[in-house]
Image 1 (spheres, helix red, strand yellow):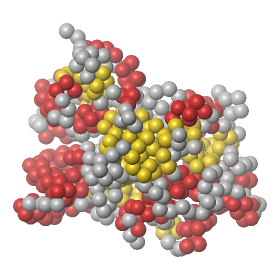
Image 2 (tube, rainbow, N blue to C red):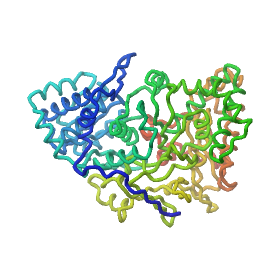
Image 3 (cartoon, one colour):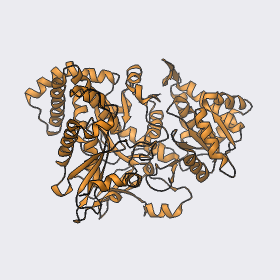
Image 4 (cartoon, rainbow, N blue to C red):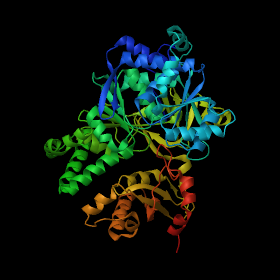
Length: 597
């Protein structure tokens, strides 16, 4: 199959926009708990009526402060309730929110503000304020008004709007429709300057309405709720924000990934979203703790049973022995893992990178079905997602309603539909290159099965061609290696070289526990790089990864680096994608050493 078209299930009123949602929800069920907000160590509920009042009050203040229809307002903050209030308030006031990662540098902020034509900015902390001021100082017009959340400036904005009437707010809402510009989201920029993706209200609203219609139990159960912890500057979390508000599911925010399990247990979400690295961490941490307490063999068997049980769901036959063991482990092991995620999580949505079949089967086996999906900033996050009533682990699911897929002659995945951006801001050439006859060229390689389920097989621009002429997709090997608890990141190399090799980094958080469990005592990263036990473990991970590819594509050598790939050293994007060109430049000597005599 080379084409798959999913008709739109819900058209919606053409005059609707995201600005209508807070008021609509308040009218539908004013006392419904729309948000649960973390404040210090306590959580408080916010009703739909309260949320609408907060949004409208802030919108009045923005209008009073001079925000005109179409004006850009930058938001630079961690994932928190105020982010969502500000997002919707800007839409209600007729503005265009421009998200900026809270880890961005002054140079990155400067580019986004300049390219988008941003007039106003809201940042979270004094540190963000200093970065924004430095960026503004290098711009001719600067930023006209800069507010800081931690300084109580949102209250100041609200106070400024007391003279703005309800009718003025309603006029701003009515002046927008589905075709209006909703936001400009800048791509992470693995190469070159980030491009601003212009996404409309219908890109978000139409996709959210149709996704909710297709996802069934995930959103339609009476207690449906999710806890956001990924950056709201990323399109994935932003779409889930809109999806939850549109579907009237309770939502919370957590800015501290280090304490996410504590927040899960307090909030008790029914579905979560995460990138594969989060699921890997949960699995690896549980494995490490079980090993440290002398129950490593029990956990390993429980994991194998969970995977076998899940695989049996696909074949329609689970051996009786596995069924019985699964029931025992559900009480002894799986229930404990579910409790760590808040004990009500039934589904998890995964995106951003391939999940891996073993991890997908493991989590479904313990009672948390991961719905792996696929999309880009340019497609308002999801274009495809596995469905609760039919999950195909190893695929990223079928197209969502209102989305069409096509596999080009060279294997590239093309997307058309409700979710595709209207263009790159101020960059007609890039738009014309990316969207041809309405089809967005993703740059990813894939294939469709007989049911229209998509499988991503590689990245067009990341294909390595060895000196022997062998084409190698590095992502398959990298994803498998990253699943190992000792490995944080890796980059597969070999373009123009005689064989495939890899640069590997050690997970500093997991090293102490792994070392202790393997009788090594305390190890530094530098010591681990040459430790025979560590090298043997990494070699084992490489051998396991190589099983996924032919001999010509397999990793022959690897090198453990002295530092990790991080956003701080410029080797990862804020969405945790490898900046291959930067890594190849910064670690050129390490790469060449792999091919030395």
